[in-house]
Image 1: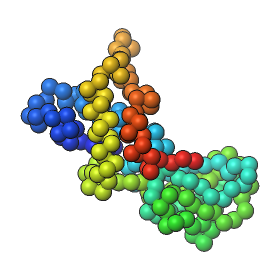
Image 2: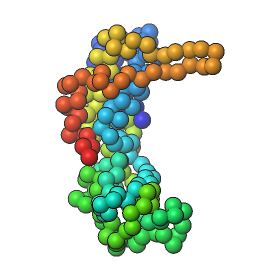
Image 3: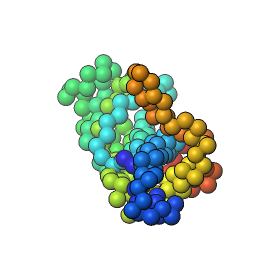
Length: 196
């Protein structure tokens, strides 16, 4: 999901809404910056049904941090060392709980589990917003930083160096590297970032 709109970025850049000369590059930058910020934040922004398959670590921890938070609900949790995740591996609701009402995306699983890779499958609903419009309405400060980053890259195209490469085999769009995020953008978004 794009984390802002072309119309909003044009306002920031003081580009008339009827001027379409830069729309293609701006749309590409909006998408690239949205992906870059989601990667930087180490989380899934788009709210919806998510599925994660997780390892049970050596310390046999029973608290799992999910990438799309806050959590709205847990649909199912399966524990299966064989990674088939059939109905017999389904945990009952009494076997797990969302911590802090899902605010940080943490789930506590109560039964003792063996240490296996990819043995927990969690299906849940979570994320910051389901649509760009909902994100803009609910988190205008967050969107502000997205727009500032897009505007910066547009005004300083030398940071992009090469945005795409074409050859006989096709073309590839290159996204800006994470280190082009402005310090003010990183600082403004840090409260939305997953640290562990």
